[in-house]
Length: 172
Image 1: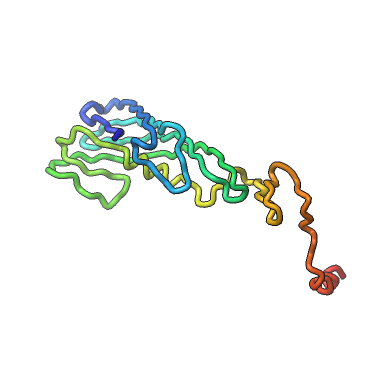
Image 2 (image 1 turned 135 degrees about the vertical axis):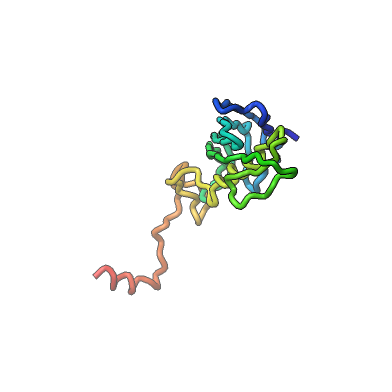
């Protein structure tokens, strides 16, 4: 399994740039209805200040999914940001933190794997109702043709005659 491990010992107060690239499979990144056709690229800057290491950067990848309206498969770029602080303390075990933006580790920790953070950042970016475009016209409810690709012969204006008398009231 690939991992995005950062060597904490090499991070100085001057800061450094870290780059990672993994395929979704190696990151164990999965989400129903979503595919990740491109590698997940991460660019982070890390700087140490006392016993704290500030990490911030951006994740870049693309996601493939089905449009909720027209059912076409489309691809969208996502670029979530990640930012967190690692606190290195005189402890023997990593500690849970109340705050998601803080990671508490023993001073002796050599490496930190950011994979979990990267996965979460990507999953939070996935749309609840994917649309290939804001203006997607969807499918014709009568014949199922993709209305983005052209009109169909259905007449959506065909109304039920029983409503005619009511319609006349509105037209007055």
